[in-house]
Length: 264
Image 1 (cartoon, rainbow, N blue to C red):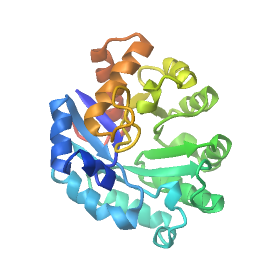
Image 2: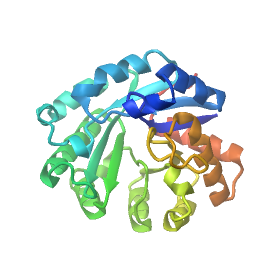
Image 3: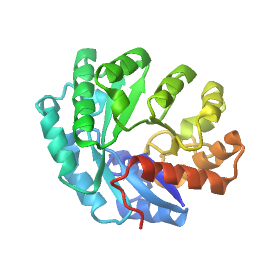
Image 4: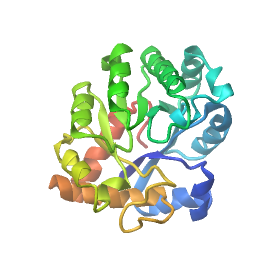
């Protein structure tokens, strides 16, 4: 059994591979028995994500504001209390985020990204619901804000990890999890592959980030949750463990981190 710990079932790009029902069925046929569909804009997405998650036993969702949307006027109006209240409102909500900093694209002003990130960290602290962190080209600020806001007291995952070994080590020292996407299977991702080897068996997750970043041998195609198995198989080789062990570890880690999710 595999879990896709981060996908976007509501994203219009995902529909290139079929309806939500078809994507969930394809995943299940490929031994992917659980999915976390992740929110990037609360005001636009929460109702659709709620509807999707409540149709399936092993599909869960999150609530959060992606750094790209940090200056969206409706998202700016959401307070920490609003996020906390919403996160507590539905047992199917098992995470807060994704949130964080993205200085690669800078689609939102950096100060807006930082303020949004702080809001989400505080909501995670208040609710004890784990945080999904997006960080790209912003390692120093990401860790500084986490430390300033008491990040050592939250449960969190650095999703779609592409950062440095130093960032991974800092995150692990805080008790965080590291999630690997299809990027780790790319030929030129040698540094990331070396970092993956040092992440302990009880601290890694696998994800697709579908519809983005399809792993080899599907690179360049529209990604889907069924493909998370390819990332898992590649990680198993890197870490010199069996595919069965990799599935077991990553699945147990998912339920350890996202404790509101119930195995069925």
